[in-house]
Image (cartoon, rainbow, N blue to C red):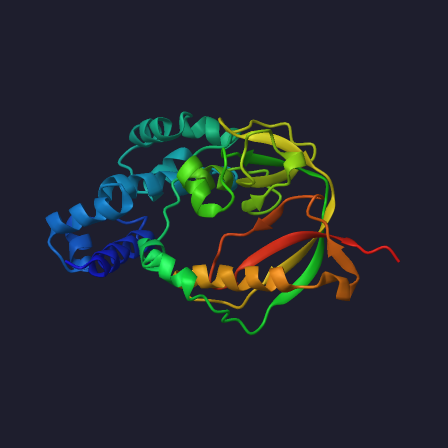
Length: 304
């Protein structure tokens, strides 16, 4: 079985699971969806996702249940349990507590950061990384339109997970792991969505890498900090935001490289600004094809 055939078969199973989270899902249904035997589907699913199908389904259901408990007022734990196909309130509570170290009732009242399971589509990862070195060698800019604007970022705090030496996303995943995003997405008090950041030296501890992942919080935030994370303060700053064209999700690498090339050649002085890389972290949002790739770099108004 060719690698791309495996990837597409597992992607079909992932898509089915995502679209039927509140329904009973059987291995027979997944095998019909993938087009292979139940045994073979189970094997390749674990090979590419790291989890057996039903472990994957349970982890995803628990994470979506956690978000519902966090975001919806007066929701009953038993109703959430039944919504996500758990047999009983007790079984759901045991599974939730094992996964997150807190009961669903306590979590709904005062949700701390937890490690949500937020798997990437295997197609995006495996097909995009195919022959990655060759892609880098033959890279050519393929973008026509970029939207640029300057925004104000207020004084704020940043809950951040450092790595030892990473300077970019893939090295960061090797050092810190690829599941940091799930923790960041669980933080209810977040001002904005989680970000990948290139952090100036003056904001980070010694012996840490320039690239990190974090989530921005109100400047007066005094809630819990996820285990292994740090909480730092950031001053107000201006950010020049670059947003590319919508792209096919599996082509996110090309979209990122396009915007990076635009930023590297951009002359903010033409518009009365100059780069101010020491004023705050440069950041990137999660690449999502429907909105285009978004990256922002600190600027300041030029002296007149």
